[in-house]
Length: 338
Figure 1 (cartoon, rainbow, N blue to C red):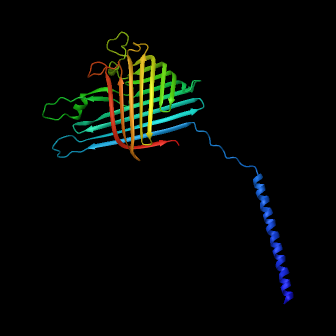
Figure 2 (figure 1 turned 180 degrees about the horizontal axis):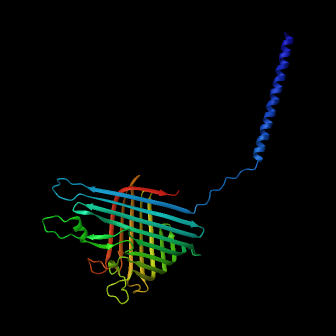
């Protein structure tokens, strides 16, 4: 029995020694593998490609309806439909910048008392500004282009004559309307060279002392209203184009209170060196308040003011301040680059 115990003890000791040797060898192999991995050349992560463009598109669609039936106080059934797009595409690299903005607005209304569609919103406005940094901080050399137009014909609707017995027909209403504007009637195109000053992110002041302007009126009956010059030798025919050369000052400001509320404003002053400079000045002032009330719904207030001494307002018989205000609540969606 003693011999069997001795044999078992020797066998166990041999097994333990062999197991310990295997563990040691495994540890050594693991250490060598770890050292090899550590010494291996590390693959550097590829740097992301620089992004020079930033884009955004803000869309709004609004609809209102008024339905009356046996309404003692009176009124007319009516509805309105309007939409707008505000798109931006901006480029920035080193000392160069290029900012682009396109605003499109279109809308109409229908009222039971006038059996015709009436347009109440129509505007297209394109701006493009290129800049290159000067040695002076916040000051850039700049080239500024703008194009202001509308999509279609716009009218004022007078009340047609009536015999007091029969209601005016659609044809009567169409005959009583007066044309006010149309596509390229008028259109304003400007290109200016100067400087751009941006002391803060929310403010940009652009001054272009060398600005060429072109007023286009393709509808002959509207040319006198928009101050076009007479054709040489004629007392009734007016030219479709008017060239202007002067100075322009444009101030843009934008305040973003939070992700849901913002206010933008733009003031543009233009004086024509060729026609009473610094006396006959054209002024435009645009404002937009955007308030996002829910994920896909927003309240938008836009105003447009124009003073152009070359434009005759029929109701006044002379020039005056033109003003338009539009308040809408409706569906909104924004597409923007990250």
